[in-house]
Amino acid sequence: MQLFEACARHLKPLEFYGRYDHTVPVDPAVLKWFLDKASPNYHCKLVPDILHSKVIWWVDAGAYIGSANLSDRAWISNIEAGVFLPHDELAETGMERELLHFFEEVDDRSVPLREEIYLEQRQLADRRLQLSKQDYELEQQFDKKRLLDKNRGLVFVEKKRSTEKRFRKFEQEWNDTLQLMRSIAARVSAPGVKPGWIDDSVPPGVQADQFLHAYYYKQVKDGNRHPYEEFFARNSRNPELALREALEWWHAAEFDHSFEERTIYEWSPRLRELLARERILNLTEEEFVDAISRVHAIRDHAIKQENEHLGLPDKPQAGDDKVQKFGEWLWKQRSREGKTMLDLLNYVVWGSGHVAERIWNAIRSDDWAIPHIGLSSLGEIVGWARPDEYPPRNMRTSKGLRALGYNVKIGM
Image (cartoon, rainbow, N blue to C red; front, top):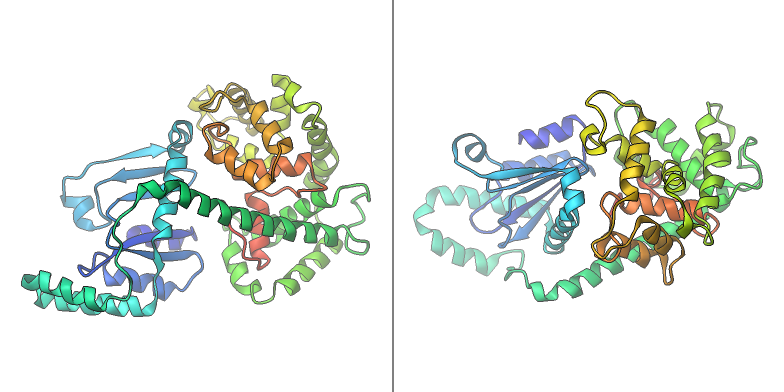
């Protein structure tokens, strides 16, 4: 419970998967904790019969994989074994993709917690105190009346089919959100809505990106708090009203928009120039580093890297210095099949087929995937290169959309 309470204290989203069977493997007090919270930040899902793994993934920080259950006995008195792998190691070894696949498999076989399941498990827990010597009989009774069908195990020969299913789900979400972004781009760039300091020549997709950026950082973010889920809970009742109010704010708001102006008039045109079809494969290392240093998702990721990983002294470093070193490191990286960063960017921005499929392959396939380049970075890059077709989308814009009440997915 300490881990859960820490998440609640710091308003960190939490997704918990627990086993479901007649042995009451998840303490009913834990189930009640999630029900009592009743928050979109905290999700409890139950996997019937087959979940036995112990994995804690702090996304973008690292993962623990080991034998210990989430119990005082496991962490205080038992002899357990486990390993913590930092984010850099997960990304560079390809284990981050494996973790993502693992949790997708688990999620496919999970069922969200509901009140009836909690009451069933609480009653079972009470009965187990009296029937501990009759465990087999209880299991038989449970199987006859259980609320969730029994899982028979993972069939790994179905991996290709399950991957295809997940891709279709991703493709649908990506395309739906893309159309939503296009609609917002048309509205935010319309006369009477567009602020006076934005020129008519600025692509609508760029305007949509900067509108969502400003809305998120100036209207939603509260110091170190990122309460976009709280905004979603309120605005999901009427996203249109929330959007109208945000657009009115954007049109009339008086704030220091020098950051937005730099992005609109300096960074965006420079990225279109460098990522143009006829130029992208011929970038020099210096031009490549210049390009990726203007991608917000990559900048944010670079600044979070350990100095040692970037070959920098162990003392505080300027953000631009870390971005520069990260870009130089990224230039040298290759996919498992030998593709360069320029190959990857050209494929995602200008390749054949649908952009959702290209982004999926760029993150998932051995042909294209390169460590530390993920969905947020690629969605933004495509948008800067081709804003008239694909408004830039990164984690920040997704959070802005969700805060406005739209049920978009944060990350993959």
